[in-house]
Image (cartoon, rainbow, N blue to C red; front, top):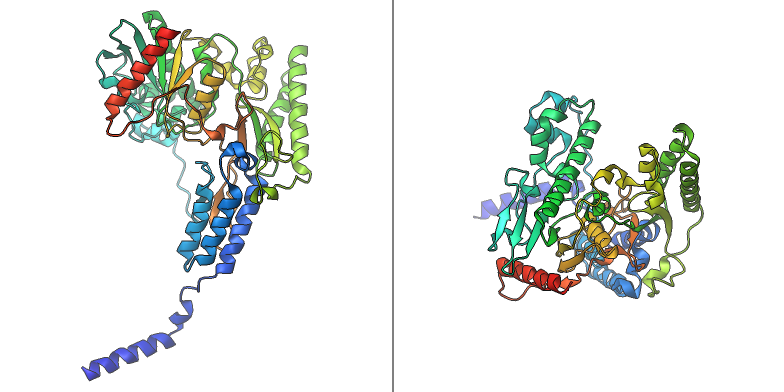
Length: 491
């Protein structure tokens, strides 16, 4: 035993003398993590579009207290993991699903780029996958409404995420049910597979994606027309569990009414984070003015919007106001002297307005109003509409619910949405913290509700249906239907 002990001691001494000992993990550096916390706050002050809202009483977050808690956690941290968790907890306290810390990027050798593959040479499965069409396996409604008595599916052969049906109620009324799984045509693989014989003859992948997007809207519009023809009493659009997507959260609202729809006022960060979107829209408007021979009426509209975007571009280049007050106090959102936001048109394009509807040139009209390419489907349904939301309704799905609610097209039923609001109008590399190299995913846009509030607050239902203790999902689905039945009778 004594000899064995001597061997162990010798090996330990050799390990201590080994050159590898110099490569031991560095000691925990609290001051460096505290510097990262200060750098994180600077990033938020500069780029985070929702900061002034979160710092207001309306935002519902006590930022000075949240900051103080993070500083205490860093002062008490003993490891890098604890310090990193303190920063993650700090950002989680903002209650913004788009705001987060990302892990550091690995330093790796330059990857070899695979040879390009033309999706048109492939079968439907591989071709759709190469286009970016994915199936995440969510095929059910947010609540199992299809299991209730009186439910009749209408298009079982369609994409599982585009199935519709009619729910017949005991009093003879009928509700048309439309589920939107995501606001992105690239999340409907069944549709892509069905269209593949047509898609594979397109001239480019961009044209393929464009065809897929238009076809997705056509399927939704056809479902609404079917409801209209069948004489249902109301339509329920289920966007529960819908994580969002693209700008179709705004444009699709036009399918549910024949009256003009007001898009949300859109602002972007008054910083380098907001500039790419401002540049993109300015260049699109400038191109239409220079190269597409607009009529005098179109020229006036384009010129006014180009000037507005140019003013915002210039504002971004000027010294910005100081937002550091958010760590010391709250200021009313409507009276805050500094928001660090600049105007960026609307959530439906630079200028969605009936004046654009009168323009004959589609390209010019579309530069101003992105819903123009859906125009043949506007008003596919004319009647009562309800939108079902829950805590997993996020981002573009919240934009849809807000547009429907603010324009009095629909009443929202269910529970409060997730509170993601506007996320990103341009995809810039996330800023990196100097010590930990954690990257900061920072939303750079704000959509304002009709009452002037920030959409990141979440969508509050007109008809709340709150989960009850011990209640099954099917029982809650029945309560949603009962709530709609009572509301239809009243209206």
